[in-house]
Length: 162
Image 1 (cartoon, rainbow, N blue to C red):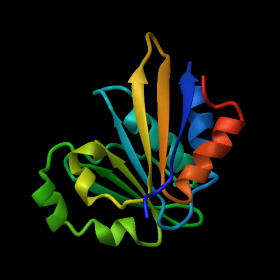
Image 2 (image 1 turned 180 degrees about the vertical axis):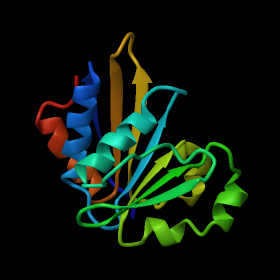
Image 3 (image 1 turned 180 degrees about the horizontal axis):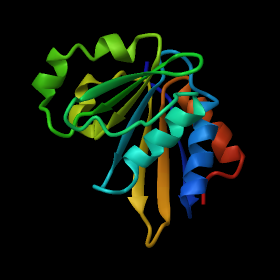
Image 4 (image 1 turned 60 degrees about the vertical axis):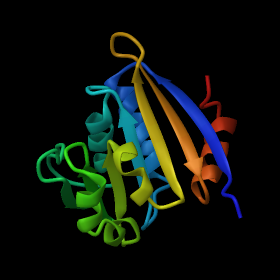
């Protein structure tokens, strides 16, 4: 059976709005949530990840795991697994046993996720962050399967799309 896919889109004008959007998305997150982040270099993937981590109660500094590949943080109600797969191959990513994270008890954020798309769970939330001039960003969400397609439907009804 083919998975349902839905979309939502936001135009973000500031860091504060990025923080608000990350909090909105964090409200939905459950154990096993997978959020695949993509966008140009410097578009705001790590900034979004930091805001998301704060929204789920991760204390302290959250920085990009560019060289460590995976960083684990303890949130107030569940762990956060933050990945940056920019510097590894699909084969190397597969050897890391990412399934343990994707289907674990925490939330997984994967920066540069399209580089390992074949390893990602079939159901996931994809976010593409794009520069829109100055501080503005466009964030496009694609909900694949449940519950992510429902989330995008809800955000769309809230007026998320432009």
